[in-house]
Amino acid sequence: MSIFFSDYCYICQERIRPDISWKALFSPEKEPFICTDCRGKFERIEGETCRICSRPFQQIDNPFRDEDVCYDCIRWEEDPEWQGVLKKNTSIFVYNEFLKAVIAKFKYRGDYMLAKVFSEMFRKKVQGLVADVFVPIPLSEERLYERGFNQAEAILTEAGLQPSNILTRIHTEKQSKKSRTERIHLPQVFQLLSNPQIEGKKIVLIDDIYTTGSTLRHAAKLLKYAGATTIQSITIGR
Image 1 (tube, one colour):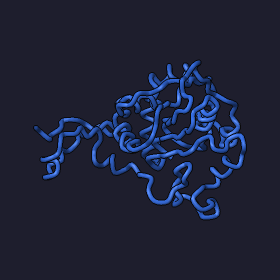
Image 2 (cartoon, rainbow, N blue to C red; image 1 turned 120 degrees about the vertical axis):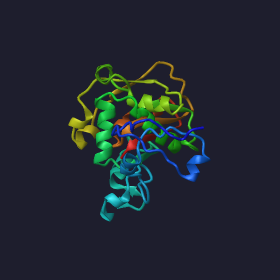
Image 3 (cartoon, rainbow, N blue to C red; image 1 turned 90 degrees about the vertical axis):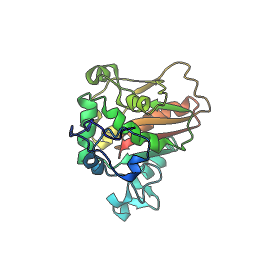
């Protein structure tokens, strides 16, 4: 079986150089999707992180954390309305300039093939996770028309997992245009399909980026009230 690929990197479009190491010679062939240079620009979240939102503590000073929880999550958990709604978020990469550009290409320029890149990374992160249902954060009908596909759903599909589209979304102004305070105090933007059959289920929400946690918590709150036992989330960036 040949180990030589004629593929081009899905991100930079440069030709992917084949791996001619002994390890590659005796390993099953695996399509690489991205080149070594691009892979190296993704900054994995490692080391100490907030146990609730995955925020790397190396990004913040000690006064902005209390043991293993960041102050953003402390504020969420101190509010009875939001306490315990989202059990945990796991993010894969730091939202650096490179990831920001890649996600913009994925979301706003409709590059579906990038779902294959993220699904490979997502698949590894989801291994060992106890989950009954995977729910992609939905787009409004208007956003879906603009972008052509739901990025979170595409990642799940490419990872070989079944998306459960039990949420719909009311069209609002783009989140990126809102301040942190405005995001946190948003009215409920999600609706639940009738008879979602999630009573007693463990649910994992999928989204591209964790910013303030507002979007994920609004979705989680709805699912919690509908009878789900625990709601976690996985995002590409944090």
